[in-house]
Picture: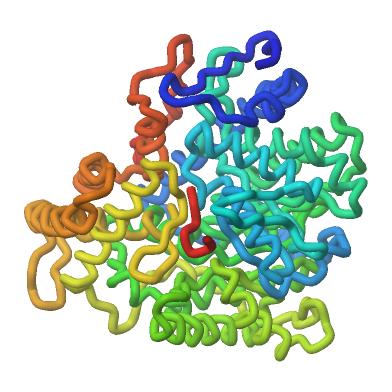
Length: 565
């Protein structure tokens, strides 16, 4: 390993061999660049996280959720984001997945317009995954990404999808790299390393460093990213505006600040994405945990056609097109099974239905999770768009911003069932177990599950237990009822894996804490992170703990994509 810059300390896990590519990823110069970003922007990052906690406390105290008066001038103004680069003008179909080497080759070769390489919800952030992922991104940019496996060689085609990277959200740390005694921001680590190694190279190749930004809740968080991009471009000697970012509107608070988020990122903005699964989770977390709020029904009943989801997605299209930005649709979780034609037929039909709705609503493109679904979605958007790369000229002036509709979580006819409880427990157990073993995106029951969908499952369980919900057949969902269901589902999954190593007991203990804890833990990945790489929850030696928020913390708490092999 290279000599470390002053104040920088690497703390790789004690167990296991170091990642093979650590030397070329973690150079002295790259670490110095990340450390510079952390020192310059780390305090602001902690400030926006404290603002999140204060906002939640205000909501709990009865503050209504609505459009900010401070943003009225921006919402009323006539302005547009910077024009899209050539290779981001057509985004009909984007495929997403973790930064595993084989997954990336398959995705880049899939025929999609863009590939979102996901360092966040689809990647379990083991040290090996994080470092190998950065090495894979370096190779992907330089078109040297190859893999020899089982007598078969994988390599990039002459034409590939445009690469977009999703770094971790502002709430996540990278505890294996300390700067001045504190873990560096996972966001700054991921984005900083990618920019340092690849910004100039992407420009030389006629493209640019493109990002998806997750979990934003307020315009201040977008402004922070904008300032990071501005500074990084100056330091790396690439033109201002070279970086382009699409923001995932996957929190209910961001739905009320879409104009402001685009405005504060306007030199670097590429669009907004309807991140549906995290959005549902956010709706439960921000509003559904409050006394008197509506209780969401079984996850399968919270579709994109329910009123509060329609209200936000239609407003997203209107907002993007008024500002000259792309509106990108979300992920249908259904995936094909190449060994089961019936499952595949059903998945294709459900995905086609979902994409027809999005194209008809005015979205310029959409997401899929499997190469076999790229042609399905592409056909839908080709029929809608014809020769046009997008439909940003469709302004959707018929959509009227309605704060009440966005915040009203009632689902007409929705019910909570015993089957829904059991499915949530089963999926959460299986996903958490996979995540703890280092897989961040897994196929479960013919659906693609990642951290976002697992968050919905555990959030609903917490809400149903703590709000005293009764199932459709009259059974009270108590802590005892949950424990009985969890034990039954755990036994069943363990029986299926009797001959394979697993971490199901660790997953069950983690799920119990998430569901039965008196306070709602803000993100499952925060507590689960301490269980990765053979670590415990003890403080890092010499690490400075985060300061307590000014008014307390009402939400205190702390991979391989198998479908693409």
